[in-house]
Length: 139
Image 1 (spheres, rainbow, N blue to C red):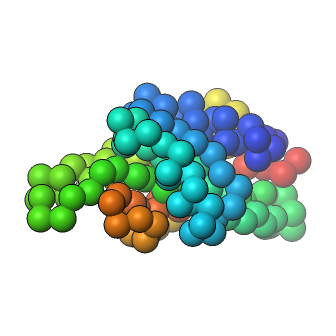
Image 2: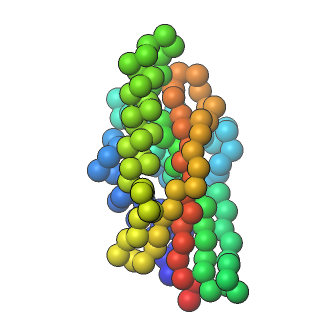
C-alpha cells in the first residue's frame, strides 16, 4: 500500500508529461491555493496543484480510499474566447490522463475521476478542480 507521499509522487509522474508545473499542497483552503498559485511563474502554466482532501477505509477496512483534487490552472483573459477554449483543453488533458475507466499503475493503485468543476482562486487565472478517488488495498 502506498502512503500519501508515494501517491503524490506517482501522480506527479503521471501528470508531468502533460503540464509545465505539477505542485503538491496539503491545505485545500482558498488562501493556501492562492499562495501556491502566486508561487508559480506565469510562464510555467498550465499547471496542476495536487491537493489532499480526505481518506477513508471501506469494505471492512480492506480497501483504503483517498480523495485528492487536481486544481488545473491556466491563464485567463476576459473577452478572449480562444483563451477560454484553451483553458477547457487543459482541463480535458487532465481528465484524459485518467479516463475512460480510471488509471491503474504498476503499484496496483487505481485513480478514478469523480467529478470536476470550476474553482474560484484568482480572477486572472482559469482554475478547475478534478477530484480523483485513489483506491488501493489496505493490506
